[in-house]
Amino acid sequence: MIVLYRQSTNKIIWKGTGHFYRQHDVDILDSVRISIFNNNSLEGTEGYFGGGSVVVIYDFKKDKYSKYLSEALIKNKVKTLMEGRSEILPNGDLFIEESNRGRTLFFNADGTLRWGHYNRAADDKVYRVG
Image (cartoon, rainbow, N blue to C red):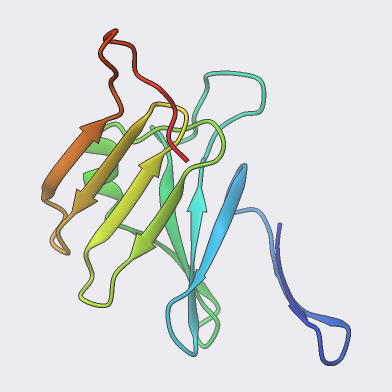
């Protein structure tokens, strides 16, 4: 569940359920839309729904959920069981942090991968990022 809480009135003014699993990292995109990093994973397993983690956009005005650059994330096997984050930049580019897999990725607004990086140490092990 994602909850929008208005501190000035001490009220929950919106809640969203059912479109994500182990979600977090909510970002305000503009006056009517938020993005949600959806790990899309089953707790305690290596299982994912729909192939891996996704970025979900909710439009309050249209009362509609959509996925952002989902084909690009599936193609590049973006998967993090927990943690992780996303940032949609003003020009539509997308930054992803796969915390558990020690990887960061940067996508152009058209979904092409601009660059990716594994947090690999001199011992050749990949370490988590955060």
